Image (tube, rainbow, N blue to C red; front, side, top):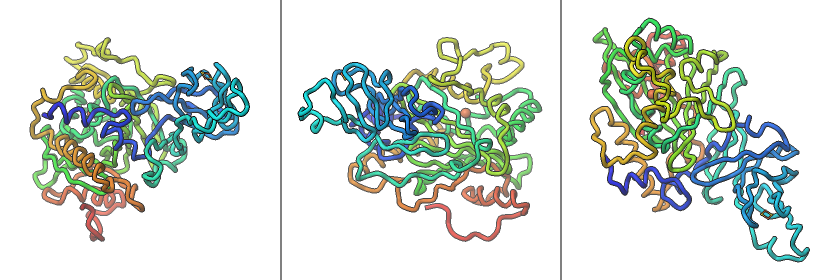
Length: 434
Ligand code: FES
Ligand SMILES: [Fe+2]
């Protein structure tokens, strides 16, 4: 459990809050590029860290992100005219530039001083991997852009799926810190069907984990943030099934997938304290993705502008009680919807003074303590995780069989060896953990 105070510190993301300041020290996704595909097209509303913004692409193709409401009397710039260099408000014609300057105030006298004095909050943006990224923090603290390798893949090897969630981001993120839950929430009763289904999505590994519903969980801090391992027993006492998850600050994770399987990178992006977007970024450096199979297994297909699916807390996420008898554990279809069903069922922000954490929550506990410590270190002016110049962002997660007793942190070396057709990993070059 957490104290109320710590629960607030870990869930409130608005400007000026400790976590809001922490998240603003990183490059984060603001929108997917399909939302602002057309130069000169309609601006789109973006809710991000408790702020209301608009994203747009000006007629010359340059993207921008600025506060939604006009600095004059507050009309929404989502209605505005999209012009070269910025947005013009419909109400009295003020034009706000992409860099935060007010370029024109046509209803004011030509010599008005207001233009020089006023600014309109706008944030720097970068396009990469099908996503518009932004940095909302102090200019002098901007970290290097995290160049994840999937950003450079061809379109048919990369799938960015954005899905709205009616809960605080932490409820979602903690699902990815929780290696034991798939044995229950994501279980299909017919193992053969499950195996075939996930194999179709390029994910044999999700059915492999069903071998042990009480994995041993290990956690350690890394320069990027943290690493989680889940070690499971198998039918062969000499072999373990190990899944590792790599975390990159502030809310990114590489999810475990097996040898030759497509990989998954996720972001938990707070819209405000009560809602978030999940970005599922499916990628495969070797082959095209099987997109229908991915949507089929995860159930997360969604459309702009709202990126919601038909499943809501009000309709019980379309839970089917008959399917719970002869189909699957949850009665809900799609792993992403199963996750969202339980996380939204907790309410917008769960009161964590009421929980009772156990052994399976080891990584959740570690993450909370780590972030609370990093919030303190931020106040002390220390360097934040994942921001050091030259940091390696080519990590991957792993899901692999390896000898029982071998260090769990070496799962990636084992998976890479198996992908290279080797029986054992090559001799180690250097330590991977800190
Ligand atoms: S409210 Fe935007 S110009 Fe007046
Ligand atoms: Fe899950």
